[in-house]
Each structure stands twice: as structure tokens, then as C-alpha cells.
Image: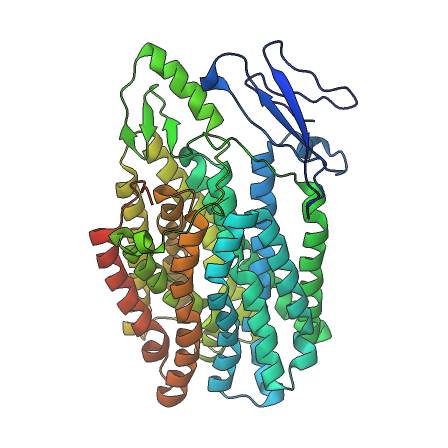
Length: 514
């Protein structure tokens, strides 16, 4: 069941563990924990310290599924984490669709609808820093599981509190609290398990689950509402999240690699070793060691942040962090507002019914799924060729910001365009914004894998503010002006453009010693 390509611990189905001659086995009993891990096996090679490997393998009673058992553990974690993000956005966009019949039934104004949708981000903002610390302290896997459980239970309670506005706002706040820890938990998992030349694809795959969740949610919600009423959407989506929690532990085991590995290195196709895009000196002897090291880098270090004070002051002295903070704010201003208001925009401005408005709203996340694969592959390819990592991240983030800015400008200042063309233009801009997964969202791991989850917690805390202020402010401006250009597009264009300038001036992926 378990195997190492480099001569480590080998496990075959229904056979004892077998070890290569030069490997010794240390066995120690683990403390009981939430993951029900029974034993930890550390397999270390003979005299060559450069090729030593330390693995902690947690026993699991998962059903024997042939194709799943063949996956490396780090890929299993990435796949299941991506599925959690699918559920995450299903529970986020369900309100974007359900808000239309809810507002009609309960007599809400656009301002009240904006308040209900923004309440999610109250909790989302509050849980960013705690989520980052907890992920670094207890592992992203445990924090992610707890977050999914909280937001799923709160989602299922929404119909029971809908007629009591404070109760509804509190439930959506809890949904935000649960979902707010998921980015930091995922960042922790990626930083621990993925080398830099696989990182953009890992980030893209995991966070790409958000786009898949938007598609699934926007497809299912209108049909469910039409057949059974809006209440059933929240009950069903909540149950799906609870089911994910029950399956997560049995489907994965946690990998705890050696803390001596350095996940910011890789080997290029020409045999040269690279670190964050910088070519290192190479010789025939060192190339072999670099290749061996790169293989072990596929399992990143365990980063225990509980043994020392978190260097908050050093964080905020770093200009690159401030660029990340502002970029996160700017990107989320456009993203959260489009996510919350697109169905209403298509319904009211383009005169589409609920089902068709939701179907058109699927186009941006559907395009994002395609673009994310292109962006991540391009970024990883450039880095593997030796292109400076900072240049790659700046290029990707510039595309992510300027594309939607241009497309929103076209939709705003060309009012004579037919509705279908407006939908195509906005879809193109929103889809290309997914380049951020190969830009901003990789930079936290680039500069400090050890503190990546905390750094994302910092930037995402500020990044949640547009969800709190922007979504509600859009509803208020819409009530006052009845103009989608002033309420939705103009502010987003402003932040996309200024975010591009700040990012290109101050962003950096150079590793930092905090």
C-alpha cells in the first residue's frame, strides 16, 4: 500500500512491510489524536545523509480502491482538499441564487439583500488569522475538517432562521467563520507537501475547486429552488459538506516529512538546480545530489510554529507583504462583488429569469476552470526553465488584474452591446482573473513555506473587507443610483488598476528569513 521510489518503506497489499538492506526502521507509538493515527514509522537510509528520508505514515482503514491506493499521499490530500473547496463555493453561491426568491418572499430591499450576503464575510474576515495560526500549529488537515463541519452545519440552519434577520445574519457569519480557515489550511497543506516546481499546479487545482463549486452550485440551486423551494438548497448543500467530513479521514492519511527538506528548490530539465527561479552552480556530482534532493522535496518540511514567537514585526517590515495585502484586497473587491451580484445583474439588467440568470452566471467560473490549468502550467514551466519566480508571479498577477478591468470597462461604456456579448466579455475578464492562482496565491509559499498559512491569513483578512463593505456598498449604491456601472464596475476597475501598479512595484517571491 505504501511505497517509496528511493528505496524507503514498501508496503504491498496483504504482505508484510519489506525494507531495502540499507534501511533501518524506527518504530514509536504516537499519542492518540483526532486523526486516530496508530503508529509512526521513520525510515532512514544508511550512511548517506543526503538521501535520508523521514516519513510518518498514519494508518487508515479506507476501503481498498485500486486507483486511489496508487496515488502518492500528497496528491490524495490535494484532491480531497480541492473537493472541500468545491463544497465551499457551493455554500457561498447558494445564497447568491436563493437571495432572489428570498428577497421577493420576505420583502427585502437591495440594501437588505446586500447586508445578508455581506454577513458571510464578517465571519470570513474574523477567522483568517486564527485559521493561519491553527493550521501552522495543528496541521491544515485538522483545521480544514473542522472548518467544513462548522460551515456545513450553519448552512443547514439558514432556512430555520430566514424570517428572523439577526439569526440569519449569525448563521451566515458562522458559514464565513468555517470557510475562512480553509484558504490558510490549504496553503499549509501545499507548503508542507509540494515542491516549488509543482506548487502553481497544486494551488490552481485546490483553489480551482472554488470555480467548480460555483458551477455546481449555480447549476443545482435554480433547479432545486424551482422544484422544491429555496429552503431545500441549504439543507442539501449542508448535508454534502457533512458527508465530506465523514469521508475525509478514511480517504487520506497525513504525510509528515523531514524538516530538513527545502520545498523552494527543484531541478530543471537541463539538470541544473534552481531555487525560486535562480540558477545554482551545478557539477556532475552536485547534479546527482540536486536530483536526489529534488525528489525528497516532493514532500515538504513539517513546519512547527509552536516553539517560537511568530515574527509579526518582521512580517510587516517586508514591502512584499504589503503588496500582497493590497493585491488581495483589490482582487477580492472584484471577485466577491461579481460572485454576489452577477445573478441579480443578469436577472435585472439583462432581463433573464432566475434559471437563465444562474446559467449565464456559470460561464465565468467555467472559463476559470480552463484558464487556471493554462496559467498554472505556464507558471510552472517558466520556473522550471529558470525564469525568475518573481517575474513569473508579476506577469500572472498583471494578467489577472488588467483583463477584468478592460472587460468591465467595455461592458460599462458600451451600453449598446447586446446582452449575449456583454455576457461573453464579462466571462472573458472574470476567467482570466484566475491567473491570480499562479501569481498572488503562490507568493505566500514562495517567500516563507513555514509561515505561509499565517501570511495568507494576514492578506486574506484584509482581502475579506471587500466582502463586508463592497458587497453591501454595491447594494446601497444600486438603491441610490440604479446604475450598475457606478455600483459594480467602476469601483472594481479602480482597484484592479491600482493593484496592478502596486504589485509590479513591490511584489517579490524571494525567500525571506523571518
